[in-house]
Image (cartoon, rainbow, N blue to C red; front, side):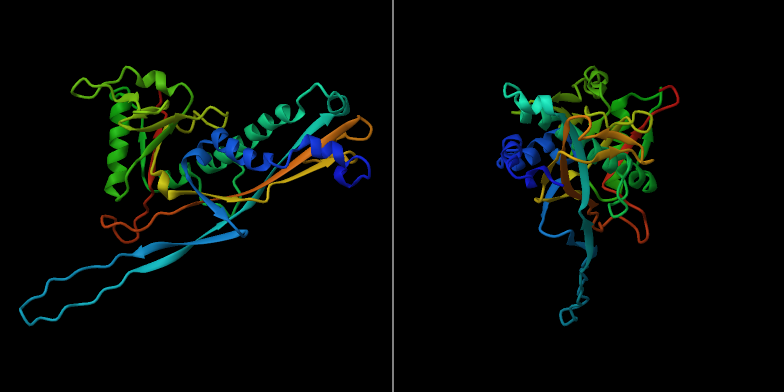
Length: 313
């Protein structure tokens, strides 16, 4: 039974969750997730979203004489489907906290929600951790399948690894416009120089973020990064799609139990004088990788690549 359905107590829930906070949750979640803050956000009006992606390119032909015939060509498009799946979190709230009017309850809960959502989205998109089956393959799996990986070596510094990786991605017809990495990577970058002695890692003009080879660079600091699987990832962010449904829902429960995957009761709301705030967010993930002029038929390609940890790491 929803707490807001109990006569006389709905006001408590309204005070707990201000209506205007729904959009603020979405905005702040973007800052808590490296994927949501950098990928192209698609507003989904239904559970499934379909976007056309270029499948074949048009061609041009020489006319062999003054009276020669001009040939025709065509381009084809394929539908790329993105499905919004539920991402949910339950925040238990002791009744003593709710009854204490001096505690800014919503300010206490909101960072927990943002942290939970951002971490799960990044884990699924980057490394495939708990990834919904309807989502695109993870960045790690897709880049590896396309051969867009470079393993760190003692013979090369990180700057050389990154430039080699960028060349691999460019050979498939895609560019790079941003980097993400494990925490602490910036301290490895600050001393690196190109062949002319200029730093490859600098502050972007008019921005507080840092830039690697002139492109945005972000360390993933929400606990989702797996340093044993990747050290740095280069991406074309315009090809990374995050679908967002606006129907973020909030429910407050005063009765019921919270159990683990084995059915063991973890928390009994009535017996332990606790409310439970449940938030459900619907989000999708897909990658748009249109054909390019340089790729060969049947070749596996991907608009991104990974610097893998070396043996010494």
